[in-house]
Amino acid sequence: MRVIPAGAPESFAEALGLLQRGEAIAVPTETVYGLAADATHGEAIAKIFAAKGRPSFNPLICHVPDLAMAERLAVLSPLARHLADAFWPGPLTIVCPLIEGSPIHPLATAGLDTVGLRAPRGVLAKLATALGQPIAAPSANASGRVSPTNAARVATDLGDRIPLILDGGDAPVGVESTIIRPFEDHILLLRPGGIAREAIESVSGLPVRSVASGSAISAPGQLSSHYAPAGRVRLDARHVEPGECLIAFGSALPAGADRAKAIRTLSASCDLEEAAANLFAALAAFDRPDIDRIAVMPIPEDGLGEAINDRLRRAAAPRG
Ligand code: TXA
Ligand code: MG
Image (tube, rainbow, N blue to C red; front, side, top):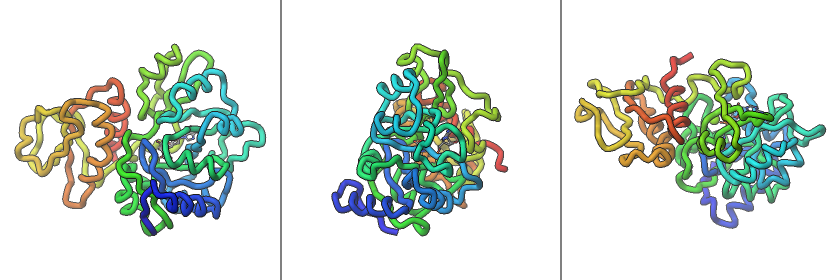
């Protein structure tokens, strides 16, 4: 495995060559690093699942440079187009019905008749343009591990299983994209993420409804224990117990913080965007054999807090 800077022209050529030959490589996006392959190429997609060690073939998000490529793949309703106009490029994935004869390989959609489409910012979009095809990319972590927000984390998880990692530094958003499915009179929120629910409501003028957890229509593959570090995670902690590490929010630390084994602060100024950007790095830093308990301070549920709390609840969920 090679790690090369995402910005260099020869890096781009090497990455494109590997994608054209049907390889899966790690690429930075504004949300998290993705494990990218040509979405029309079955063997390339199989390499994604093999490298991640996924327990099953979950549908993958397909990345496009723009609306024009999206419309070659799927049917975008006027509402879907309006949302794409407002939020692309950016961390919004829109689930749309496939067009008849869509070139996306069924392994990428897990055989569904819909596809999750997203136009990311940066090098992944440029690669899709140069490839002339959509790029399927789940987060570039091994199955069950936290999503990587930097190249070193990808290397730890997948380094021996993939040929190339493009290093684009820290992912600025730090949580995955928001996944929605637009309907006539409402929008279903399949996964909270980098675009806040309130922003989608205000742009669309429609209610954004959550999917009840455990519902058959929730994003397939959203295993409840998914973003889990090795140790037990205790949420809404208003004090620190002996032996615990602390994930802090705000500058006022809870009782007992002075005896925490270690402290990572998501945002000292209670900025939820800063907290989202730091979340996975904090979970990853505490994902160590010598850390068996992690306390997390309460985080407000508004704005990106909804996505942060969703990931934290998964990290704290009982292990299957
Ligand atoms: O920010 C992101 O979304 C990152 C970057 C790399 O783009 N990608 C990412 O992919 O988080 P992944 O595979 O870790 O999560 C994708 C989620 C899965 O839970 C899957 O169930 C859901 O998207 N999904 C994909 N296609 C879908 C579809 N047609 N219907 C419902 N859910 C879908
Ligand atoms: Mg993932």
